[in-house]
Image 1 (cartoon, rainbow, N blue to C red):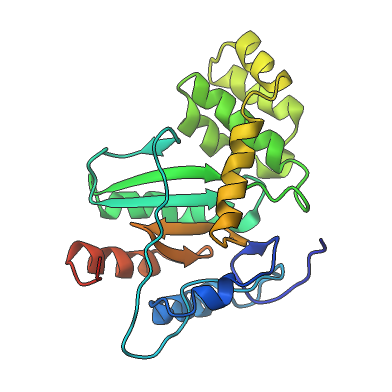
Image 2 (cartoon, one colour):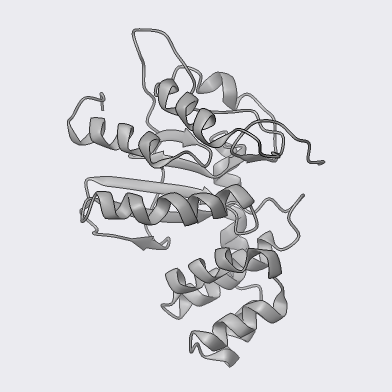
Amino acid sequence: MSENTSQTDTITFKKDTFYTVLVALAFGIGILTGYILWGRGTTRTTAQPAAPVAGSAPQTFRRYDIPTEGFPSLGPDDAPIVIVEFSDFQCPFCKRWHEQVYQPLMDAYPGKIRIVYRNLPLTSIHPEAMPSAEASMCAFEQNAYWQYHGALFSGQEILSAAFYVQTATDLGLNLAGFQTCMDEHRFQAQIQADMDFALGIGVQSTPTFFINGLAIVGAQPLSTFSDIIDKELAGEIPQ
């Protein structure tokens, strides 16, 4: 697949029917705002926005059943808001969201959000996407996932086998265990299962988020997430 430029906040690896399936989802105003605020004067890669997009009244909503058990997560188990992120450590828009939105979002809703990370490495365009995903899971095995997660995004421009080992060293991981995990590709099948699941429900871009099952695509600003979360906490969105 080739990368082309357009105005969007995602990287896409498969064009299919997801756009039409999710066209009825709401929050188009939030998405439009996101593109206005974030989408000017920047070189992008081609993407078809999957959801949400502008719709007409009455609004309809589709909630996806996204498993979270056993995946890296941060936040209370009983949090009223569960955000599942399908992401790629080599995706520049994923990095931007992590650096600009992630912490302000968690700070804005203390104790109310549990974020779950699921891997969607775009292997056709990002050569380090799969190795970095594997490295993160090898760190997860040693209870150092979120520290390693942050380091991968911070070091996105220099991802490599040497970087993964150095990061494990810096975090004080058991290097022999980490290297064995990497050499065995211990988590590759699990990561592939994440990819298959995402494709199965029509996800085509990174980052893609599901807020209590409601889809939102792209490195959208804090205001877009807050709009959905506030409505969800207020019980304004049908279950």
